[in-house]
Image 1 (spheres, rainbow, N blue to C red):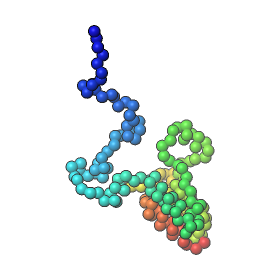
Image 2 (image 1 turned 180 degrees about the vertical axis):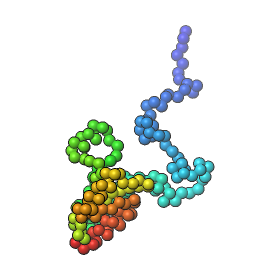
Image 3 (image 1 turned 60 degrees about the vertical axis):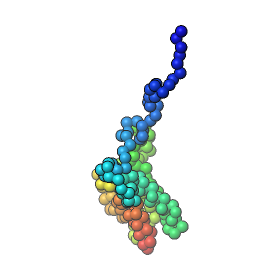
Image 4 (image 1 turned 90 degrees about the vertical axis):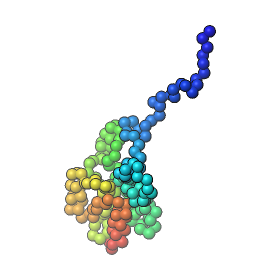
Length: 174
């Protein structure tokens, strides 16, 4: 008689092939916060809010904070209702990227546009950057062209800087 034994604790656990890795296919494995902060792994200490933000934030997060601020302050600054983002950059499926390019998307267009005339400018453009990021050659050319056309153009490395630019722009006389 050959009896079939039920699976017991001696059996190996099922393979984790069906469980996706953090970050999706091909993404690097999750790094501990100490590593993201460039602290020695053995160093145990409370981290500051600024350290946490710097380790976990990115250009996207900063721009989301700006737009969120704008949406909650539209009553005080009615011009903010006209602030919009241009969805350039980012990782996309190649078919989506081809479709967007066919619709008119192009390299170098800045992140945020406020088409409200103030202080002799027909509008405001903001390019959000984070960390050590710099303007691409296409963005630098766009900045020069927009300024030549009379627009106010600012490159901001934090949400706070962009909010200050928006506030300053909207409070100057028309």
